[in-house]
Image 1 (tube, helix red, strand yellow):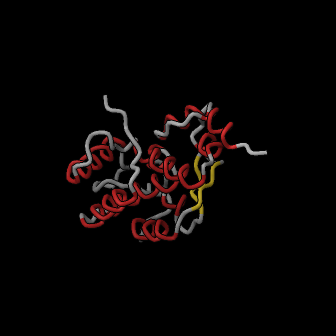
Image 2 (spheres, helix red, strand yellow):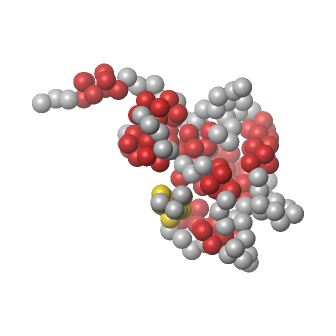
Image 3 (tube, helix red, strand yellow):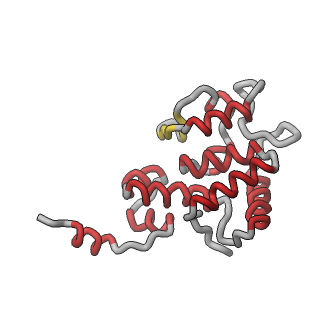
Length: 176
């Protein structure tokens, strides 16, 4: 079994988004965008209904975690949900059923194969990608630990694929 890695390169993320767009896979693009921009889990995203996201500024997960939505994502939400009832699932199959994890995994695997990304980039990489880039930008492990319900900072660092000696980092960072 391959352990998934975050997508560390912004250019690769943009190439993936571009391929989704080129193939007309707006639904899948929205799913990818939501995951890599909010850190929300796949099950949480697949359980969203149109009313949960349309005209909203925040994505609410577990009824308690509110994550801001960028304007680009709001526009994608409008495209995907146009003309749909609020009670419908946001992510539908062609037959009108709620999209399932297996379909998402296979569709993303095809995208990765087409781009030659290898086996360590999977749907499980999406949350890790958000976490990796959030950490690189803000160095805020406590938020990520809270968001992912992880017990320790070390677990969070391992999850996002960052190898840091926190004890050494702390000692070197104090200058009184």
